Length: 358
Image (cartoon, rainbow, N blue to C red):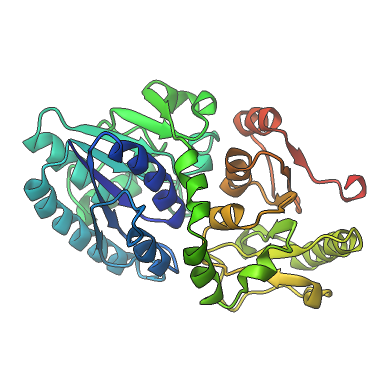
């Protein structure tokens, strides 16, 4: 049995690590293809070199992260898709795991695998909140379905599907989710299975890996162990009033430090490198490496008590990976819960932030 995993983010990779670890127990071969749509992907390669890695092979394709030109992005994606088309014909996977079934690379791998192997299965691995919220994906500010659909078919291939809800491609047979009981109605029509967290929790045993990972990025491993709070900073595009956000954030940090809590600040991984907020108590906080997924810090920091930040996947994964942590959302008015997310947050006990109640 051969499994092919296609990932485009650090979060995707960690979920696929967990799935592949379970698959390896049944002597199944796992090959991962990384399309770096994130700033720091070196740690992914390093992780696959560990003896505990469930992957038998890894391939990096053209990096998409940081490319601003739509035409250049499309060209790189087509090159990636062409490599995958040839590889899939050679590898002949029995299962293809994708974390974004809208992308041409994923659709190509799924299509070719089914064409050459009638029993091949296409599996969607959750992309975070997209699988739980009622959000409809729109890649551009305009919402003309016709323009997007026609443009995509011209740039990619006539077979390209304009997926508005991730996980609903006709090429998908099954779904993997960390909280399958809460997935949105469109996706719940497909067979859904849960992703186990134990393989990721077991990574805590790789302490030497984490020491090297953190200290090579300017953070002392020992310093991290003094942190009790991870404070997630919103992407600047999500904040209408930066000045007000700064005031609220600094008031929160001041209260937390007076409580004797150590604070780690985690910027959004896609925030501009030049972007920063003016923190008053800078000597009492630690800026965490921004391009690493926050889930790695959930594994590393042993005395974590609070996770605070905007409505995001990171709050949900905190509840998935950690047993005794309080999670709070919203530091600005742009954070709005739809009915689906409201139910999810309520059942996971992710609460709205009220500074005076901390």
